[in-house]
Amino acid sequence: AQSGEVAADPQQYDQAYLSPVTIGNSELMLDFDTGSADLWAFSNETPASQSQGHERYDSATGTELDGYSWSITYGDQSGAGGNVYTDKVVVGGVTATRQAVEAATSVSASFSQNIDSDGLLGLAFSSINTVQPRQQTTFFDTVRPTLAKALFTCDLRQGDAGSYTFGYIDSSKYQGTVTYVPVDDSQGFWQFTAGGYSVGGDNATSGSVGTAIADTGTSLLYLPAAVTKAYYEQAGGRYDNQQGGYTLPCNGGAPDFSVAIGGKTFTVPGSYIAYAPLTTGSSTCFGGIQPDTGIGFSIFGDVFLKAVYAIFDVSQGSPRLGFAAQ
Ligand SMILES: C[C@H]1CC[C@H](NC(=O)Cn2ccnc2)CC1
Image (cartoon, rainbow, N blue to C red):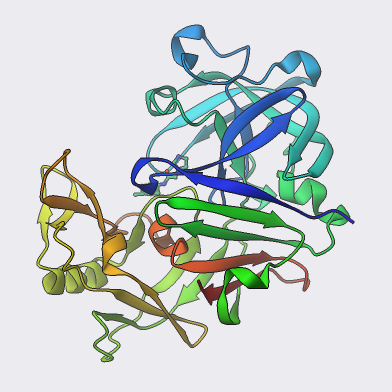
């Protein structure tokens, strides 16, 4: 049985985390994204004008799926599309011998401009893979029958290298016990229910967060508007229309944010929520918590995930998420 571990290296401000992946004989840095289900890369088929500074997948090592294509648009309105190959993909020593690899023939500006990222490796459920005419499986679904345990884990860290593991849980990476919650995969996401919350440790847990997804591909923590408003009232933040989100002082006074999941409380340090100065040297920061208005559910992105050890587990028949304090 296979198992393995791969580094997750943070970009500036932990905006995304990138992991080394070998596809054929190309070594690329991919953004592992539990919020989508396509494995795509800049390639020899991506226009030079769009791929300056990126490593590219050389599709010559692959077997083309004739007449197949893919096209994806993410929640931030970024997107990409192209052709499909099968090729050998290796992640932390775990090998998929015939993985669908989606070679980009076009990518949106934000992907071209983020030269650290050579593509994405989707880890949501294969039911939302965009390949046509026949949907393809994610890397995790492809290797799942060969893994020691049918699960992968995520240990993202604030401003430091973390890791993903496939096929095993590393109990040295968390403290205390793991709390498991059921996952509703009907929308293709790692969707769960979050409970009450508290700001700055005042144990008057108020309200309830509700339906949420665990999304390593999203930088911030998107919560219901009422919860977000309550947080920034205590944090001394304000909604800045020009910035398109809440901002707050960078000065280190931001309160912690705690949320109950499966009856256990998980805390995001206030320092994670003073996310990044509006511009270099500014004493005003963009907030790491933002409203989930219009999305349809809350998004527990990297701001939350780097405060926990997360286990994405399909070993029990029904999928489940495990969380433990880091
Ligand atoms: C309003 C939110 C904005 C951010 C959205 N997240 C994404 O688009 C994640 N992603 C994947 C690839 N590139 C980005 C989720 C909605």
